[in-house]
Image (cartoon, rainbow, N blue to C red; front, side, top):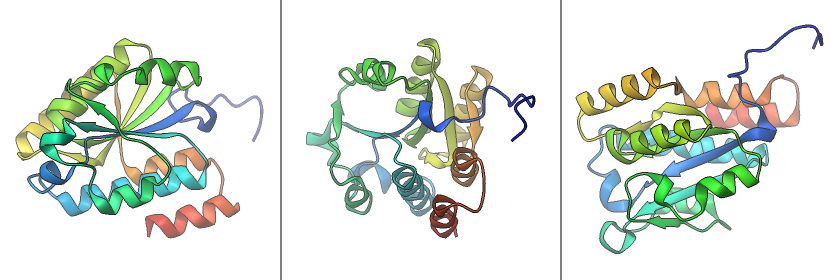
Length: 189
């Protein structure tokens, strides 16, 4: 790439990017609009981040009452531990925000549920704490379509980038022709 070309500062940079999965739990997912699509795209994000060896974090809202992360996703998260929380925003999930900053993560890709509650509050708090946030619109949901649409608009109007799973993964790749490109191409098909 020509060194004189300036890339948009909102383009995801692998060394500064992490994935945050919010509350993809058994008792919540089933009530969401398009649960299969959200789960499928969240799994694609996890697999892509694993191929690129990028950090992945996931939370569980009150797991005693809402159950643990759905088993299909949990198997993809092997080796990671859920961050339990009682607050809607992940700003209340222990030292998560501090851990991100200490790891020099400045761009956070967010997926999970519900769009208008835990996802939205987390996104707004991440933005207020100096992070760039990319919301995977095809990997977040709410029970009602109206809540989902208004949440995406609100997050975007407050500075979040609203994009898609495939867009995120190819943005992190930067170029084609690599082994990572081949693996991610298979993931998104």
